[in-house]
Amino acid sequence: FEGTRYILLHQKLDRVVATAGDILAQSTAVNPNELQNVYDSVDHIMRPFMIGANGVIILTSVGKAGAAQEHVNWQDRGAGTSTSVSKVGLTGSSAVLPNGFTLDAGETVIVSELYFSFTPIVFPDAFVATEFYKIMVFKPRLAPLDVIEPLS
Image 1 (cartoon, helix red, strand yellow):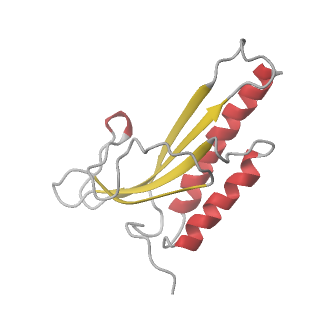
Image 2 (cartoon, rainbow, N blue to C red; image 1 turned 45 degrees about the vertical axis):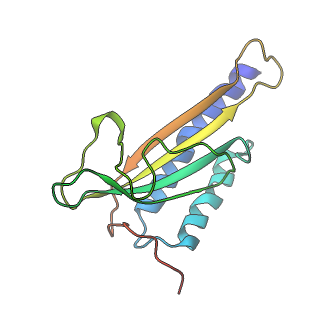
Image 3 (cartoon, rainbow, N blue to C red; image 1 turned 90 degrees about the vertical axis):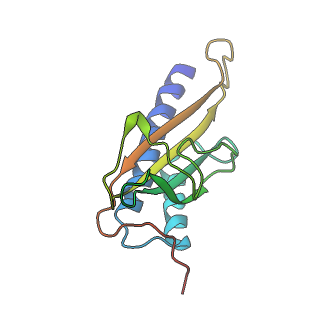
């Protein structure tokens, strides 16, 4: 039972981090409503699991201006209430992209991170409690997505 649950959860988390970043990367602009739509989609993908207090999705826009180092344009979190901190960086700081990933001048990417704490239900000795961390990077398709626009 726990093995099947662990594998299914792992697959769901992969799908969530991919879908959240991909949906946002297809947007023409980012605003609070767009971000909430992304977070709302997570509930449907995660079924029968719930993120809740066990995790969080962190969406980050990373850009590079000229010869400067990559920097975090903006960051938002939702779909859960975990207080885990982004490994990419905080808004306004230098960005740390995965595996030496670098940007050319003028490029922007959307980074989707997911934290989730797994706790076994039936056999706590067979599987240890684990914090999953997933990350994916997406190139915006229709606009740079380097700012969160206010609602009008």
